[in-house]
Image (tube, rainbow, N blue to C red; front, side, top):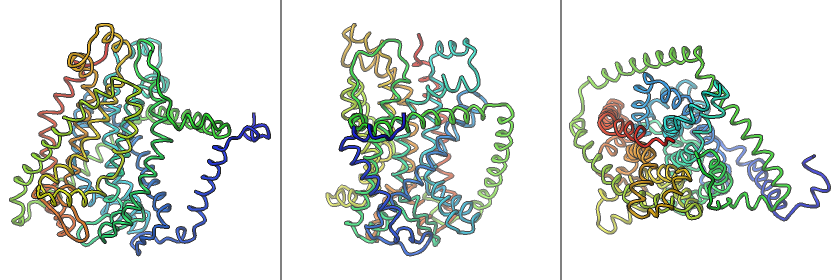
Length: 567
């Protein structure tokens, strides 16, 4: 049946007309605005005109989308490789933990020296550098979720698929990719939230005297705050909030609803599930409903086929050999970089270098405090939400929108409020680090808890288990792998948050507190000292490696082995 016909037109509702009107308005604003079309890119004058906000929003969204596409492809390949190869796992998991913990400032030199110099300072190089920086805030979290999903597949399910003769592309489409979808859905929300979180830093790339600014919401908000134009900064934040809410209504909420079909179930669910509002509204608009479901069905089918095929191709022996050669080349590049790093550090160090160990201790103690506070409120909330799908359907949208808000834009206001109460910059830094840690814990815990099979819920109800006993015997074992994954990614987010929590700039004034983050900021933005930047990042890498070896790796191995769901 044709999509458009007189019969279909007669059944159109006001919602159909509203959707067509909004689409026409979007086209007019974005593509027929001559000022936006002629907007200079690169390092030209940056306009704070509010009329350009729609164009800035599109530029930022496209950067986020491209970075997310690369992050998703990277996570499927690397996560599968780590889950299926013990030899690869020994290198991949520590590398992921280190990479996610390296502050985004640590990737600035790579972004400048590789992308910008490769393209000789052209707009393509600057855009590539910004996309690469956003990628570094999204990819590691997704890779951890793929690894967790593949290592916690019930053994009997994997055996059943293998015994049916499914292999290669069929196995990917029927077992591996569906196993990743629930956690990928929640971690995609987190990755987008992390991208928004570091949007300002990604669109304004500064190392010492070198500065590159790209048109976008992040650069708009950052420039407005630097000039004390709080009204314009509020307009930029408002535009970003509109995008976040629209993404939740049109993407994340329907995607989370759809991902429930891929959870492991051994009994049918008896509780009603609330349909997302977007789907409920679309159901009342015939033309929009047909367009939506045609688009979504075909996109989902094509996306699943591409993802499965792409992931399968990278498991072929010949491609693995190619990946091995690439890994050897990368190892050579890392070795060369290590030699250059050693030569840079071997030069006479400034007096500030002696303060780095103490600064690391200050920052580590702030991270511990922020993690304890995050755990203290996310565990009870995740438990409370997991007890009722209806409750989680009402509360999670608020949580997801709050997690996606760029807390960095509010840092100057938070610091001003805390200092106004004479509570000190140290407490302000801990509060700011919280914004980079807490959502990883909460959404990972909720994803793990909501994946509890229905037969376990029925067993708890039949046994009249509630309260602390339910928390200890049912909730915690199911959520434990996700808690460890959330903790690893939360600490990675915390290390990244240090750079904007210990050094806050507003209206030309710097508010700082001693720590490795504030040192790295000063070495990057003020001195442009690559030697000290390298030394500070190397110190963080060593700390993360030790923490991974002594804490996270043993905990994750124990959790994935002890708390795997088996029947």
